[in-house]
Length: 212
Image (cartoon, rainbow, N blue to C red; front, top):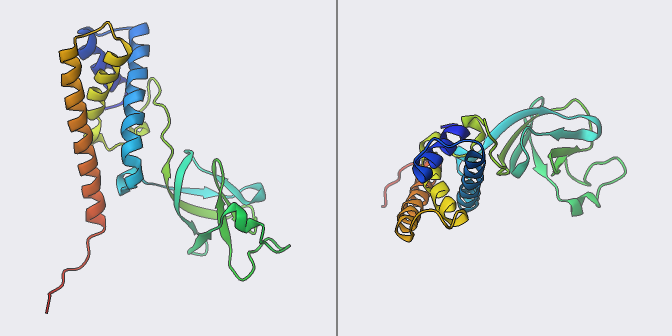
């Protein structure tokens, strides 16, 4: 589902109407509250479903800006040379020699606010970057791809949106309804975690062996 479809589903269930204007704007806020709550709980798992690979080219100063703000950089590869670059911390940058190369080491990269910067700095270097994007607010009209969650788990956000709608709109609904929403939301979050962990476990499967 895209952002509007999830938002409209929340409105339909919470207000028993299609909603418009102010109600839809509020529902987008409820959706974002649920989205951030869920992603805060699952992003630490770093499953393949949340990872993004992007090809970029360094500009002036050796910096390459990614399409999304990175939450964590997992791997940086010099596409031209086919070599993985090692990461370097800001503290280690203080140990660079005048040529800009870490003493005793090959080219490295440092994480910046919007991407990565290579050392020694050089423009026009093609990089492949594997990273987990920072979770950003969903916007009206946002495409399905703007959600970091796999499509199979989008429906979970409807239950979260209903919980937050009851919390924000305290005059709306009964405590019994809120309890139902909260129970369904907790169960939905658990299903998402199990689903993502299953994807991770599949990617880490090893060859079988016999015990002698």
